[in-house]
Amino acid sequence: MSFKDYFSKQASEYVRYRPLYPEELFKYLSGLVQSHELAWDCGTGNGQVAQGLVKYFSSVYASDASSKQIANALQNKRIKYFVARAESTSLPSSSIDLITVGQAFHWFDFNRFYNEANRVLKAEGVLAIWCYGLFNLLDASEELQDSFLVFYDRIKPFWPPERKFVDERYLTVPFPFVELETPIFLMTAEWGVSELIGYLRTWSATQRCIALEGEEYILRLFGRISELWNSCENSRRTIQWPVYLRVGRKHS
Image (cartoon, rainbow, N blue to C red):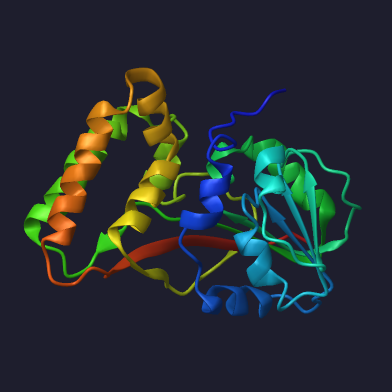
């Protein structure tokens, strides 16, 4: 069974332009498990989540179906990267204290992944899945906000169908674990316009739009965003993403 690979082409850009998760998220997740021997970050992409977990666990496994993503991942001697589908790995049974899936769960075969998660989790092990959608651009003019919305409306038809689960904040996906109430987390970045546009280019919908229709119109939209951004006094702005988190324990 092949996987839908929307990200290998822009794997190197992921390392440069993806926002960082708050330290409080990893501290919270680590506090949910009694043992801190081994965590597994599934769908690791550039390894950002694995980097956050390694502060709290003796070792971290980090897997992705894309070999290019793994090749561009952030290295750490206590992170063991490997290429594998989320639904089938060579991880030992009952070995994992915590499984994390950041901004990747919507690409998985849900039932097959849950079977694999239950196999590898220890008794009372914890699974955490989360996503983030559109960002909030703080202290931006109405014109600048509108220019982004024009861009988003343009690429919206090119999102893969799985994107709907992100728009629904993962509330509509099945979650057969003993679910826990979770706090609210925000990702925050201080970016210039080049970083924002670099981030927008990593979106699978942007890449599909360019592949199917060329990039001339997209470049014009980016130019308009840049023009409005640079017309304001402050060249760097605060950007925030709400993190939509679901956490559950393995059924005993």
